[in-house]
Amino acid sequence: MRHLLVPICLLLSFGGICAQTPLAVGTTTVAWPNTTGIGSPFLDATVCYPAVTAGVDTPLLHQSTGWPVVVFLHGYSLLGIDYAGLGRVWAGEGFVVVLSNTAQYNFILQGQDGRALYSAVLAENGRVGSFFEGELDVSRVALAGHSMGGGMTGAVLANNPGYRCGLALAPASPGWAVASQVTSPFGIVVGTGDWVTPWAWYSMPYYHAIASQNGLKFLYLLNQDCDHMNIAGLSTYPSTSVFERVADVGVGFLKHFLDLGTGGLEKAVGPEAQAESRFLMLAQEIATPQIWAANPLQIGMGTRLSVAVEEGPGGIIAAPSLGPGYSTPIGNLMLDASTAFILAAGRARGDRRIDAHVSVPNLLPLIGLNVALQAFGATSTQPLQLGSAMLLTVKP
Image (spheres, rainbow, N blue to C red):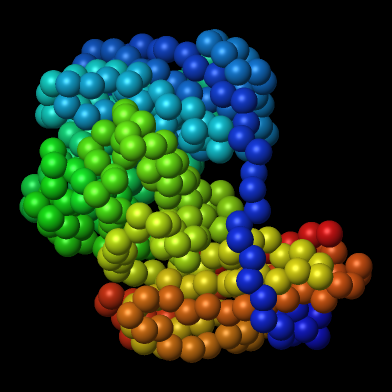
């Protein structure tokens, strides 16, 4: 198969992420029992979900693998229902979004309920007669929050009940000692127009304190047009474009670390994210090299493969298929070891990224060809380490 893989990777080309038509979104309210014994007795929430038709309590759209879940924690004095706009955007991208409606003024209670909501999601998926019975992918549950909820996202993940990753929008700080216990992939999005939780006082110390031990952590900073309210869709001033960009960053980050696609990081830390006119800065620390594709492989088309690594050597290993996992001195090789070869290698500089531009010849027999790819490179703790892997299939 190598003779088919090599010509795919010879020509230079660039493309953007292919657009996906948003799904219809339904909303419902729930009051799930809290079985942890800590926090609110009932976990009230507004839930946005992919639906057969848009509306209130409309039928959930069935997906055989179940839908990934994002639990969202609100800001001080607000409730989850106030973030229905964000919930609808993310649900339209294929998530069930649980917007917590408890702990309106109590950050301690919010942290307790944030932990309890993970157990509640698992319980509702298995409960006979539940609206979400068997419809949730409980192996893919993420946590996000805004303001107070952004701070408590870190507090919950410091004692993580099972969330795969965390995302904080314009967060308050959970405190250095608490943030230093967060080891999950974590992202922070904030703007310099935020005078409620100024980024230099809250987000930057928060970011630095997080112990990046899994995947990566990043801080994505927008200019003064991004403030404490419009970042989460609570205001449309000066336009909705700030909220749309932030929601897109979230989609990319969540899809990547919930293993829901091959292009997510393009929206969160890649060139698309940095092409935003309001973009000011991206800080990131890579604990495990991460690979993504700017767009799918298609015959007669080109794309860019990117690897997020620390400054130093790195690149991409290719094979026709994924493997069962092979232990090596630099980590777990997730490709078929008998056919794997180095597709691209280079050295990352200050942008902490290595790119490889590839092109698929316009040959019909290539349709359906699988290409497995794995990142390798320098990390925050290792001079060389194997990283994430993905499987691409050549499309017409």
